[in-house]
Amino acid sequence: MELKEENIINIHHFLPHREPMLMADYILELTPEKVVTSFEITSDNIFVHNNHFVEAGLIEHSAQTCSSILGQSFFKGPDDGTKVIGFITNIKKIEIFALPKVGDKIISKASLISQYENICQIFCETFLGDELLIRTEISLFIQELKS
Image 1 (cartoon, rainbow, N blue to C red):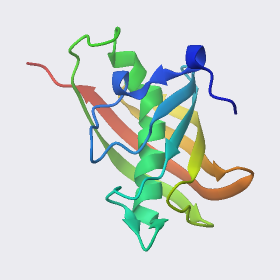
Image 2 (cartoon, helix red, strand yellow):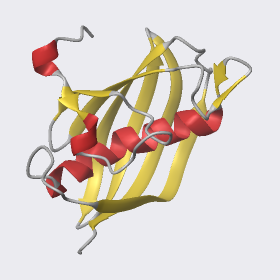
Image 3 (cartoon, helix red, strand yellow):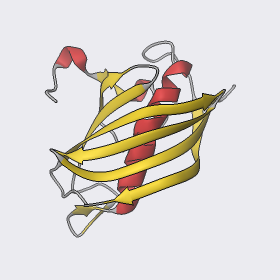
Image 4 (cartoon, rainbow, N blue to C red):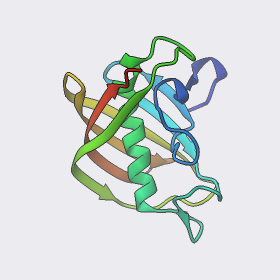
């Protein structure tokens, strides 16, 4: 998938995560039912060990990709001041096939399976080129923090 400036959505508008826990760089596609994200593995990432992005990093990246589907409903626009909290409520399935290395750019594609209010079930696959790295089915809870 080619990165074109006009197609890139700032992930900060849909996730509360910031460095060092932000595990997605860009949203390449976003609808109420699906999302595509990209992430470049850097050597200073907290989930890099022996030049590889470890399993916990792949899982966190999947969860952040998935949460942007539900997260988008809380944000009205750039810098609107909205603060959300979210967490994984269940991992129904997880299959890890390979680990990417420092310098690799991974692409994740997630689809909404079901949603009830602020809880959703999402299927996600992460790729390095054509190689499938991880497949997950995750349940998430997200809500807005009131001041």
